[in-house]
Length: 407
Ligand code: AMP
Ligand code: MG
Image (cartoon, rainbow, N blue to C red; front, side, top):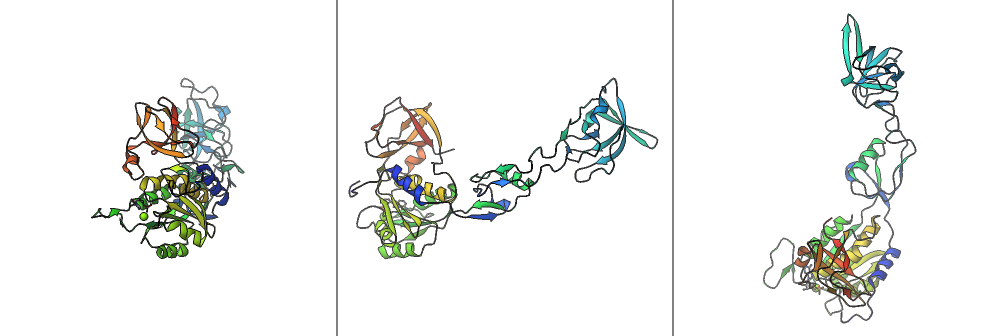
């Protein structure tokens, strides 16, 4: 890119973010707000789950040793002395020759050590006595869910840094761990510059185009665990941007447009004025005019207005920063596959190339129309290849790593 004296290497820029940014403090949230959040502390169980031995089947709890020899041609009879239901245990102890009718999840009564399933038992009433005829032998322990078989006391059920799955929340609930300590979500301000822009929701009209960057970036922020504030559209005036940035209290600021070195490119100068412009101009195509810096320790990203550059600049710099603050990995959050190239990719030594590719018959090919302003190229593409700085590109037939837009 013309105008940039020294362009920072992509890897150096990311390393700088890695050094300068730390995870935000934690906050406690209720279960219904915890899915997809990042666990802030290891969770150690103070209880056993289940807290008691329980039936794993509907049937009869008895002493397993007494059932030996039972079979369809040799039914054995036990006196039914009570009933155990979930949450309502039997009041009687099981003695020799006795059984307790039991439901799945109900506590195993004292004295019993096994459950015969209902399918292998038949109740017989004689006068006032209820007996059960067993046609299956069960060793001690059969169909009994042991205390602590799910979670033992002192077990670490989840580790800090875990992105909580729905079932994780179930486990946390089962051990009574509430509220849930999670890493705070970074708040993200999106400042959109460009006098030519109409608000998303408008139709392009005359010489004005619709702001697509704030919509795209807002959704990327959400993907990365940030909380995007409603985007603010700013006039292309230095004082307006200065004021917006000076009064902004978000954990991260994203400025779209005006990031280069032209007369209308206020963002880098304003950032340098209010804080520190750490990186301006990167060895990356198509996001060379990207940059970032800090105001009061909070990162501010300069995203080029061209939508593909904006996407690329977000993904390579802002995304990792937001994920870092929110306790997530800085790695690109795209699934990677290795596929052979159907056509060669040309690149230049000295910069990283973000090349949109399409999959076809188990191969990938670079898209023909791929300028920084052609956002629909990223819609037609299945993913992208990052050609390393020191590479002149990849030959047809070479296997490359593809980052897939869809997971
Ligand atoms: P700039 O980086 O402000 O010089 O903008 C470069 C190009 O991207 C220009 O063609 C702008 O019209 C276009 N552009 C800037 N901001 C946006 C936006 N938010 N949405 C879509 N296109 C944009
Ligand atoms: Mg502009």
